[in-house]
Length: 188
Image (tube, rainbow, N blue to C red; front, side, top):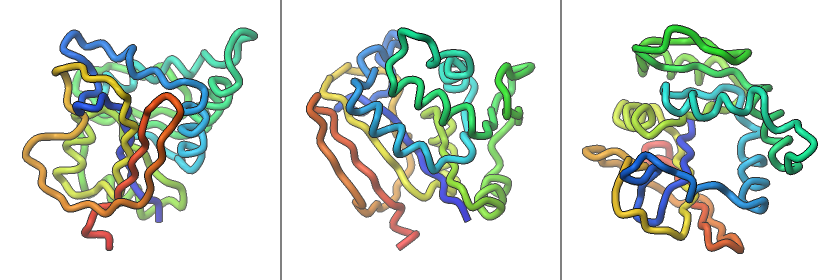
């Protein structure tokens, strides 16, 4: 059985985008990117909201150029090897291999996806992840906190969801970025 993990890169004040919708401040350096690559190797399926998919589909064609860093090339391979499910009411089609489109997140379907695989699942996009957290189908939360305050924007974690967490792992990087990995207390 796979586990469902919500992973996000967020500002120290808890945002994945600033008030202008920008997230350039979240670009990981080589050390953090290599760490993310290792985390992602266990992922067999990515669950994305439309906006996150539109950001991540970049990896379908990038990462293999002569000027691309080794960690970028490695991430592109990891991303392309995984299945993707995009949840969107407005998207008409998807443009990447191994990708399907679903109109809405259904907790029972996600639970069945977890039961039917021996690989992990990752959910990306703060709004979609918020729905999954509220539905109780997320097993772990992994946050990379970037040492920047952006003052507002899109929150990494949803309002109105109360869950106890158990810290499983933490790590600090040379850039000042901090990794935190938590398990949902119900899974103890």
